[in-house]
Image 1 (cartoon, rainbow, N blue to C red):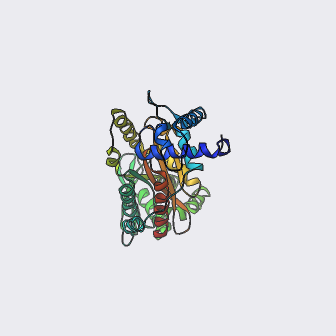
Image 2 (image 1 turned 120 degrees about the horizontal axis):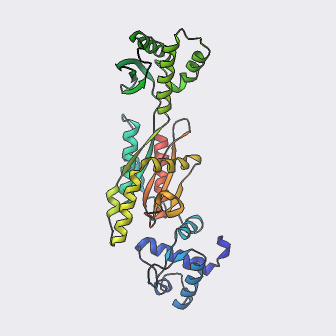
Image 3 (image 1 turned 45 degrees about the vertical axis):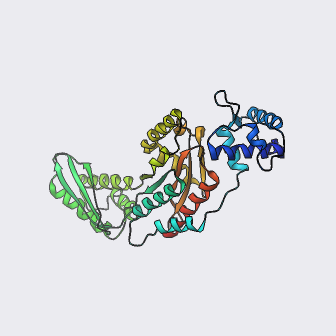
Length: 344
């Protein structure tokens, strides 16, 4: 259905129901709506409109209550066509900018503080997808640790050290590992994996590298393992305790428990957030629209952030019950993403 399916009276009543529900979390009755500003009709008329909205799938009647609550479909309908997005206050903007200040800190520290700012202002949990950085290499070597196993040690220009274990042919002489390390160092030092990977693989496939077959395999396996890992992302979550505020009923507590379980499945959440990298601007996932939140009935409001080259590299947002204050959360997430982009 579309907005054109509703007349102005139905739109006004529906908007009032949703806004009241988002504020209180309780089913909304016809008498409450009839008394609201701008709704100049009787409770009986409101009940008739509510009945029509329920038939459209926009409202539902929980339990035996005479009140109504918006469905997930109804919330989507409201967000896409009726919601009036608010503006952040100067204080909120200053708080976000202050906590995201990047001077002298790593990207992960900046993003961690950004999620803390978001969770504090939204009173919900916040999440950020942190891209793996393709750092410039300072040193790389292969160290034998067991028959058929070797440790690849990489030191980046920023001083960080990362290790990976790879399988190598049993009986491979230590000199082959030294040769593999020297070969990669000569091509990698001062550059990143992404910058040299294609050229090295071309050399190996065309046998232009002065390496024997076993050493070439070690180089290729090590490079593939490391470069492949660079494409993965990690997830930071802040403010889960905020979700326990205002929990009044046992069923609310059970939904929060389900959400905590869903947050533990970070791989699933990363896959969902990856969807937001396909476009620019804020994106909302409401309740059962996504299988990940089908049990807890939660919503995710996210926006991608960009690096200095204007490329989308990650996603940040807020997660909480479907009864989020979307009009306030949407500009908050959007502004935070833009602040991070400017920092990068």
